[in-house]
Length: 414
Image (tube, rainbow, N blue to C red; front, top):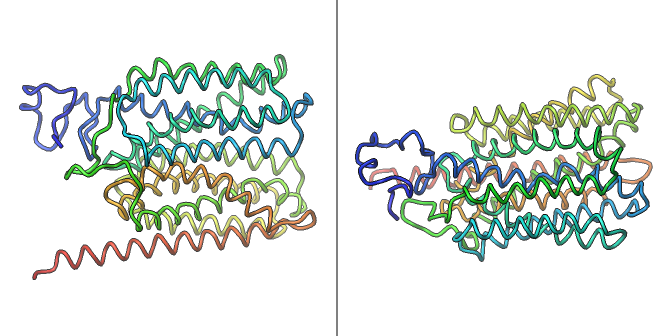
């Protein structure tokens, strides 16, 4: 694999400072450098692909209020779209070669716009079918964005940028939908807005990299199934992410069981979402400076403290404050799941699957939680979350120690 940038002439490459890409290139990449416009476009594509994930509650609830979707249908529709998005992202990382990406992204954007508009004419099972199919182009767009992130030298930094951009965009669009669109135009207005946002992927597609090269210096391919150790790292990712998603869907019932009002539970969710932005910014600054295992231990302590607060009759201010702290920790820990997979699998094939696994955790966590709670007591989800977080952290620690042992043995004199 040539280290020479695609957008850099031979003369420019010759005068570039040793070990550093010119100012118009992203210099922290494991493979050929990307231009800044390519990097920005790749991240923007991921933000657009994930936009709907933060709006499902609003849009699907509005469909239910209009009599076009049942209450159980809300959960089923959300689960089907998250599952299809995650599965397509994962399968694409295994079977597709990252070439002709601009054409692929443009086609996926057109299909997504059509499906978002088709939702305006759907009801009942039709909504579930259309939204499940919409996960296919969303998964393709996300695959391209993750492909870029997995090829950077500090993927946690770029993942944090994606997380932060996703959170800010979702908050802004959700506020606009709640205040302006949904009260006047209903669910159809919401899905037309989402379609308009998806259409932005068309001009963005013109600036993403045309293809993605190998991610390592020896030219090893990034497409294909991960090795065994990569799958183990992904299992750890699934456990840790699922623990958070399991608790997240029960925040309001947990508040009620703690003797607090529904409004306190909703306030806690809003504060948690707002604090995620600070978490994303903190992860961006910490990337490349703090080991992922240190981040995991610190964030796990925050999560356990938060869940302990949920388990007792804590005052409302403490319940809200701990939810905010957990939201911050979630967006700090999330990006560092990628360097864990990179350390376990230097070919970065596992890293290509990290985003898909985190999406699947959005369905897997709540599914497991449904077996751990009852109408009278939802505290079982807290025990489930502790168990999942413990298993995930144990996997991360084990992998980290194995890699350190191997590196020490390789560095020892013969």
